[in-house]
Amino acid sequence: MQKVTLITGGTSGIGKAMSEALASEEYLVYATGRNIPTASDIKNLHYRYLDVRNNDSVIGAVKGITDQHGQIDILINNAGLGFAGPLEETPFEDIYNLFETNYFGTIRTTRHVIPFMRQKGSGLIVNISSIAGRVGLPFQSIYSSSKFAIESLTESLRIELKPFGINVCMIEPGDYNTNVNKNRGRAFSSNDSPYFKRLKGLFDLLEKNINGGSNPEKMGRLVIKIASARSPKLRYTSGRFFERITPAAKSILPDRLFEWILTRFYRL
Ligand SMILES: NC(=O)c1ccc[n+]([C@@H]2O[C@H](COP(=O)([O-])OP(=O)(O)OC[C@H]3O[C@@H](n4cnc5c(N)ncnc54)[C@H](OP(=O)(O)O)[C@@H]3O)[C@@H](O)[C@H]2O)c1
Image (cartoon, rainbow, N blue to C red; front, side):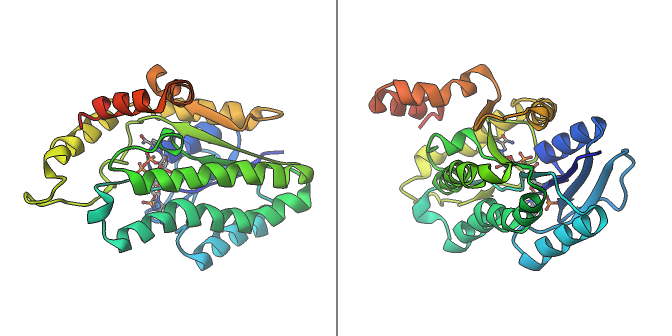
């Protein structure tokens, strides 16, 4: 029996790579998003419209898949946006929009999929967090806090859903070369902003880090490993070596030393 898989944000970057990797391994994949191709030329891969900010859209996509197959075996909550800039200069609308996508979008989709997994007595939910969900990144306070929220959501749900045979886990990627920087929201500080001097160069550095980041195909290989694991771990950190050891370094090093390293890394 092919496992029916729903991926949010399956139209670009990490989500696209995971969708294609799973489809190549005979999973039946529904890659979703707002900007979907009209057709798929990849076997086992189908596209569906799903805007995670819109309840009716989530209900419609889940219903379409479950009416056809009676089940969703794997849900990957991947749709997400970045945001950079000083909190003080970030319009509240942008803060709300980011949480609406990264956090409430995950909750919304998960709530509608759980009943099908619970009835079947099995399922796998993979939430895409970030290293930024383990470390509060400077000038990315909103993005980081949305991913910290994903971390605690995942920890809680993992225990809550275990008796129903549903496994819940998360992946914490480092920098991956995707469209995330192009789609990242920004608070633009003018010349007379008190943050201007420290921000100068930060946006360029973020772009450079993403362009030099890992190939999303690596996330494809990881998600196959997780999907076929009998008992997936809670966390999978993914990326380059220095990114993978960052959460451990944070827990071992004194706070002041870790902050100093982070400040130097971002040239602040
Ligand atoms: N790239 C990295 O370095 C990195 C690092 C850590 C974590 N992550 C996380 O990985 C995930 C994927 O990011 P990416 O790097 O692959 O970025 P990306 O290339 O910009 O892809 C983002 C995806 O999210 C979808 N999306 C955005 N808003 C949506 C909405 N309202 N409803 C449904 N889908 C929506 C987009 O699809 P549509 O435009 O078609 O709607 C797109 O498929 C995000 O959660 C991100 O936070 C990325």
